[in-house]
Image (cartoon, rainbow over all chains, first blue to last red; front, side):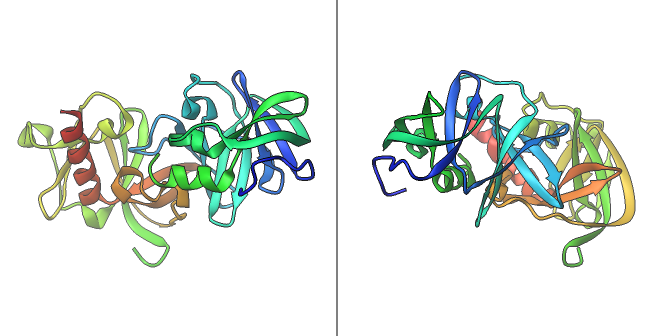
Length: 144
Length: 124
């Protein structure tokens, strides 16, 4: 994302994990899934809860609350994010739906995962952190 | 390994967690007492205290302890490692196999032992 202001035209899927709300571009959010019991991955960081098989593909599940550092959130639902480089499932305790987002798209931090969360912004009448899915994917792929 | 298939696996548990190794990676299955103080425990890759009831010995000498093991001669299709996980555990993940409806991470024994050794050094 090279813009610093949400233009109000792109749609986002707005969801919560714990007490924090996130918005991911709707074009990347393939579906909301209920995942089965996960298979832990040896050597994986704690925020990577495990994997499950979905339509012949192995999908890693990332606990957004643990990743961001706001504690763990027990849920069996996730937003499946599909990118040309791969797929991720981001845990979601609540899904508000698809909404336009307005506000700033400045990185919320200068290091770690917060570089790939942008805001402050509003979507679905809530304060949301806008996820840069490509940046988040690259962050996780580097071993986070 | 034949393309995206594996023929002959060791289906193991490390604590409550599943982990599989290609049978060709394992030269000997030993008792832990024969490698006391020298073998790594697969449990540590899941954040659990070390422990093992069997030790897998690679042809090149690396040893990894597991809690249970089952030798499986079936041929399994290997589901590719998700791109986001290719660097996890030092890149030792070959992929995943589906056995009796459950996913098992398929791991190269030597690289996995090196990962455990590195993690132990970092923790020390």
